[in-house]
Length: 352
Image: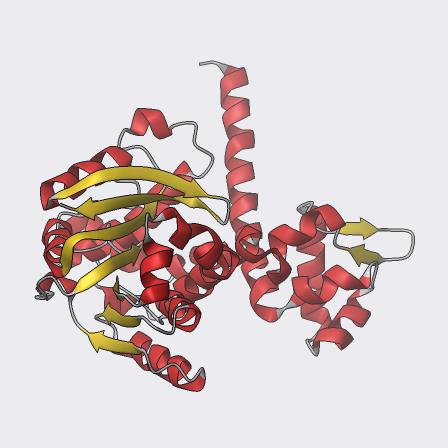
């Protein structure tokens, strides 16, 4: 028995417990707007912050105490005030865009809601269906919108060879697994001479997508409810995009083959997937690896298995992604990253 090792592990586990608690409280701070209200006000009391947000002071005070003891907010004991340091603001407020980690903290509370279901899946191997995650589309829409706003038109689309020129002149693009359609709305507004189709199986997401497109006055978008494993289009699109959509598919190989078939000869495909290696050994020192494998266990892998799929998982990785793309018939596969989307890898490829 190595007592020093045991003590160090005890410290690690206490850190895990505290960090898990702080993740929940950061999610609350994001959703209630407390971080956004605190950031520009300097040092304030709990009463002042409660007045500014219209929230209950007693709850605000307890939240501030958690934030202060966790080192996220500074506490000035001399006058009982709290302050969000300037260096912390981009990481916990909406002004940080894709850097806002507090937004991602919502995963912890959301996935905790299905813990009993996942435990049962451990026993049966049956998975947990997508219907058990009612808040997931909202969270993914919020997270992805921040990334899309920061770099979709300036970085991501220009990284696809010939895409800007084709879309400017007038091309046809499909976004497979489009969710609430934020990406496709940005593209449709930027390239009015092109036409766009968004495919998704979620009626709720597509209802929101259609309403947002109508409100924006975009007439060059069509949204279609479809399980993309059943996508049956032949040489219809010049470009196809997927954003974090392939790894939780029940039939990822079939989906990729359908996408390849739907492209015109020489058409381009952008496949955005979580940045990871396919080897656990290579992921051991990646800062986000524990989070990726947790999200995989609690959602991505389980949803795929529930649909009768193989459960690729969130960290299926670069090597397997390239293997799947090559099997589907894609060529000239390039892997890139962008400053606005540091947690994902962008696989740009072509139909032969």
